[in-house]
Length: 443
Image (cartoon, rainbow, N blue to C red; front, side):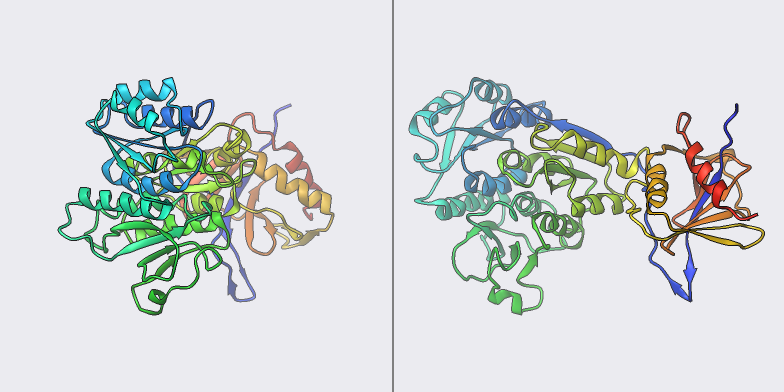
């Protein structure tokens, strides 16, 4: 028997004179999702380098994979000079890392941290591969200053300046997204002050930018003055990364189109990700390994500029489920980014104006799940249809789904634009939804 399909229209409804906020159901763009990973953090860094620098690199940065401070701050240098970050242990350079440095053919290898972090033996092995320079101080704080000095030397600025940023010295959570942002500030600085260094916070100073909330870094005196003491912070690590991503536009005047997604609960994969973001016009965002973080999901769903997602790390760091959630945001399922958790669904007949409210919680849940499970394709040209008077499903008094029981399944007027239309993809089964609707429509 031939299955009957129905047409739906998406719009924002007016209730009691109030205009509800526009609900974003989809972004009209393709989203390319890829993954870079290796067997461990060291191999992942090598794979990042191979994919990001296929033709080699003038510089290579070598940092410890056993702790985060030096590599994290070193991300500013990597982002600024377009260099990969490769990881080593205190006493070992893996064969994969050695081979990658040979392939890159750098004119200089920067080693981050003192001999207690990366031994003299490792340095000697690296010297065989190229000219080395160690950026190190007596502790993580002084090492950060040495790295910032190297950034200044590469910046071409006549003076170091005093526009610097700070991150927490002992907690990576709010800091993973900072290095790329700071490094990028030296490249396109016509509309903003160049951030001349990323330092580890140790005592009250006068920073221009603070990454993280007041629990991470106490309130600074610079925050009392206009256009100084800019703090990028969210309610958690995921929100903070999103605030940094937003600042690419508001501070750097840069329209990013790529997100580099890393595990927000651990640091290894994030250490090698700075150059991936900077080389792909992107920012670093964080996620929980098992589920895409709410803040990250909302940012990607609402930002139509984002065309590429590069996951760095294996499935233990960023699971296959997270990848599926990313695909659902803007691809096959246009309802996936919409929170359809609801306790109020009603159906209105187009002719009689009869309204039937669905109260059964299981049936409400089933309708939501069906809408989120169906796949769609975008319509163009002659396939675009005109809006007509239709039956309606209204969800939580905010979302109206206009339906036509006699026409093909189509979505018209997405986000108020009648020129943007979708239809049900072949193979998507809407029979159960039709059954529920027909049961409740008044005659």
